[in-house]
Image (cartoon, rainbow, N blue to C red; front, side, top):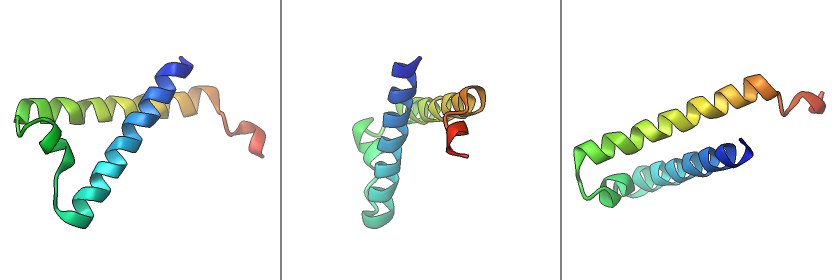
Length: 69
């Protein structure tokens, strides 16, 4: 479970960097890595959505910030 959370965080960090590259240069890194294939592009974006949902579940279920109060 911890490994899944770390992988989802890494995946979302990759998408954040990719979005920053696209915003600053206009170069779509995800489209480049999927060779312009729209099916693969959408599959990669779906994985980002699943990663975000997993992290939302993890934050609600396990409350890792509970001790910060």
